[in-house]
Image 1 (cartoon, rainbow, N blue to C red):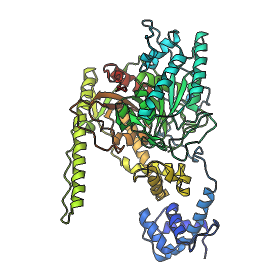
Image 2: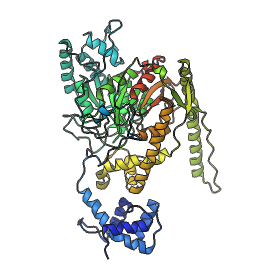
Image 3: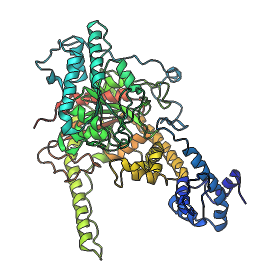
Image 4: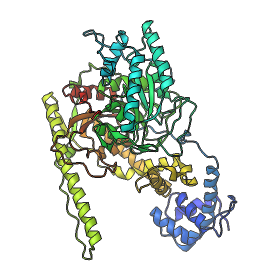
Length: 635
């Protein structure tokens, strides 16, 4: 006898679960159990008690009694019909869920005044004032000598008429064309648009209408940002010719600031890694390796002196990782500080847009131009970014993640099984060798981490040992893949996921399939655990203002889940005595560069304390010179 919805939920409660079993599991199994293929989507699937047993194992619940399983069948069939009805909508990637994520632990939000929190979105026009004190800037003999200049240096020359935006733009476009065959970092040159913008910038500056420090500065956009009139490929096979008829909010704001968009730059397919439909983006310091990702082209182009700055995005390391590999300065803002309207959605509760630049000052200038609500991205929060390069950073309490600076544990050899074969022995020995090589790299790179602590102490910083909250951060990462699988639902359902370049066990196609079997109840439970992490992270930043850490995986997971901002700085270069890189770059590790490649350091701060974070990181960068070094490309 069929059950109604309420009776079905009551039956589930009796069975010891709070809501129906995972729809994706049962849909897949039910489709397999149909007597014969049918194009009649209204036909209900056949659900058997055996299928429920299998689904229960995958969902980690049960076992259910025979009577309980029989009661569930009609409700599961009904649920399956509801799933099919939603799928007929063919939801576009731009449609968000009916919930909005804000990573605040309570109603009181640090750094946000009630008046600003309730203010409606307004045109974004504020740009930082320029420090005009100092010697008159002089133009070099060759415009290309400015390829690695900072925004501040370029802006001073543009403002005083020593160079033109048109000449600068033509120089960067020429470099993009010259080095793209080597580094594979361009998807689309926006040459026509750029030249028109540059000419307009020169006319406005000559007429005394100077918009601010980004006026006339050429930049590059990660190709998940929509730009009207140009394709937006998301780096993915099957999307090579996609066009979105709008400009992303951040593109509009940089247009308003007078910046000149010269290229749409590569990203790993659907924002994973550095492999895209056209190949693999390369590390300018070691072109035999990938640039890491997913903001692959943005990081490589900045490091190679082919744009004045770039925008990237991060969900779980996509600014941090390529900035580390390529030796850039990357700023991942607090979640919600920059609106994502017009950007590809991967995870609505974790995606963040931010600048990749040559120095902290540049990152701050760009963030000042792009931050603030736009009235469309409901996660965008009206927190201020009050950039003050003269801020007294000595007043800040600075912690460091002590355990991350401790010596790494030596690897233990894998046990030898009694029935080992020649092939399994070879596999075991290879695993041991790889673990030993990874250990050697960590030991070597630790010298840079310890040198950073010594440098900070020499600056008069009293370092306070702290640790990340002890919560299972890695167990929350399936939140990301579940949201990503929803964002690209039809790729899996239609089989178009086979068009993506990477098809390994850790790549999107397989991750999306696994995510179909993630129970909705456990998704909610993981979000509740996430709130515990947010509260404990907030408590940590009540003890200290800044946390210093190596650019490690654990803090990446933690702070991307809690929404805290991060600034990644180049922190030295490996010498000729560095352990050699592995023969194959699997893209999963950032510490494999080998001799001559950069290492990084990360600074963290509390939510919406991005300006204090930038001020402290700036102070550290000013007593080092790592950000002033550049790769030799013509060799």
